[in-house]
Length: 160
Image (cartoon, rainbow, N blue to C red; front, side):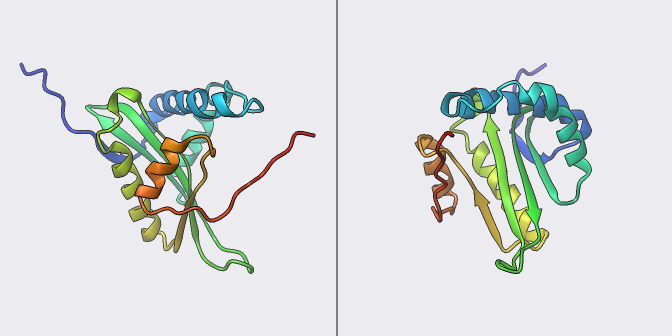
């Protein structure tokens, strides 16, 4: 029997992926927001994300994707497609979060997830895709720029 693993596949999330989605979301929060934004509740994914993912799997406006290797979720991407407003009357696909486990990075899995996201967003008639990243996360910014995203605006905050 061979110990060879199959290629990682980017696909739409299923209900059986919920635990893997929660684990990836928790790792993302701990690694990214947890180190950059002290106001973020790093326990949020374990406390609330399972029902959010479960509901999102069946929501036609949500784009929940997983990077699957032999039935194991090794990464995820979540997004949503929303109708435009009178001010900006186009459908927009927002890439909300993406994470690939460290052992699987630099293998083009993020590029596959992003490609699947944009293809599905186009299929839902989105005309624009957007993503946010912390300014100090230069690796994420570089990744998104290499996938066609460009800086458009900056959000500034101050504690009160």
